[in-house]
Image 1: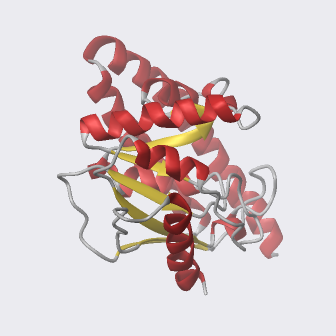
Image 2 (image 1 turned 60 degrees about the vertical axis):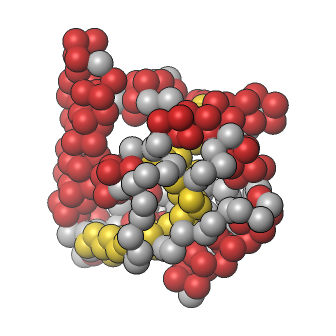
Length: 244
């Protein structure tokens, strides 16, 4: 019976999700063309609000906790474990105050309504995971951007999603590139739980109804005097403590 309910509620949510992507793609294009980047980003925040709270259609519970106050007068580098495609909308919405910009694989920059357009317009680092030089170059551009504009970057140092929920070792290369041109940035870990259980399949169907999803923003790590490997280890240990 539960499996049948998963299929029914997943169908409802995915129709809703698909419509959001199409409708907000059009709104983004209009906003950017007429009013510029800031207006387009407000549309993106609204889209991610709708995606995140749309999970209630599946009976899912959403928990967001920010354990410590974060500064608004310096850039931030958010470092998170990665479990699902659905990790991202809640980060966009709940941390919108810090204007998060993502490190993303370049394949997502084309072909997905709303998401691809936003990646191309938001200064995201669109990396080729097979080309280390290109990837570092993209991340360095993002690093300089957050330093100059006092906003934030988001990176998933595992490199790919862990559907088992068990973290893979954090790779320090992307972190090193981010801190290189953003020396004022505070490093802030985010622990994500339950998303792999909500979306256990390689596709998005069926989702597991009545799941519990959580994002926990942890205490910042000052990078001064630490290299990228040390930062990666500290961030992973802090996240692992929450994951248990």
